[in-house]
View (cartoon, rainbow, N blue to C red):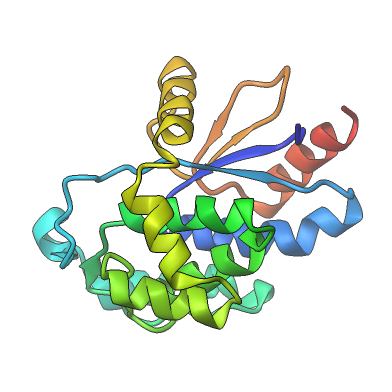
Length: 199
């Protein structure tokens, strides 16, 4: 089991930034994070939901500028996103990719689809296209999802999140330390990785 577990959701822009930060910083510690799915808004319709409806008063352009300032050192660029996606099917697709040994590239591709290309990963056809591009069999993936192959795994993750009082993504969990909720500053993430590397 990885010494660093990260609870995340594909609908969360800070989770994408956290992944970019970890990709850069974890090389110094030889820590491979284990990404744990946590769908925060399953009530979001498959077609998505306008962010300004979910968060009245949100200035999506100002938010995009702010997060791109944080993202610049890590080589990613966010487009302006105005719609919250339903991440449920994508989460299950990522579990399929995990079983196929292609989790990391598929995980990254899903984040890129949402936050770099404004794609709706709640749309099964969009997911199938991404799966095909990443070397996965879309038909086998759909069958696995529709048969409920990953439901037990997701319930286990949800139970752990509830037991740890995790309600925010990303949340970083290292044994022996209290969970860290939210996007940490680089120095804080460096310390989290240092603690994980000692286990």
